[in-house]
Length: 88
Picture 1 (cartoon, rainbow, N blue to C red):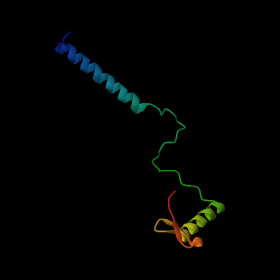
Picture 2 (picture 1 turned 90 degrees about the horizontal axis):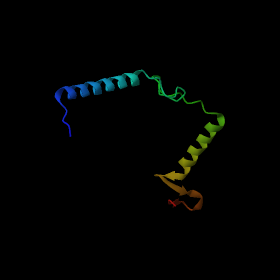
Picture 3 (picture 1 turned 120 degrees about the vertical axis):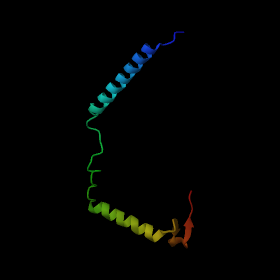
Picture 4 (picture 1 turned 180 degrees about the horizontal axis):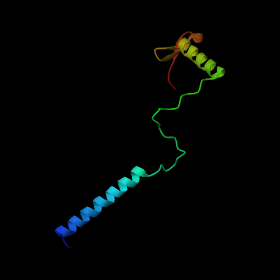
């Protein structure tokens, strides 16, 4: 087993620091790996498209169903005597 001397240790340290600095510079200025990939922008996420009339109607009907048949997180079968539906 050989023991590193002080000059060898300094040389190894300098080489390691140089390699790390070069890697950091390379990463800082490297182009993205996939330029077509979705990347967040400073503007924020893309706005959602305006729902179509059919989508808006579906959402309204779903909300009406939930308002009529859900009490405190439980589904109530009002057409079958008002019993609640359990999971499973």
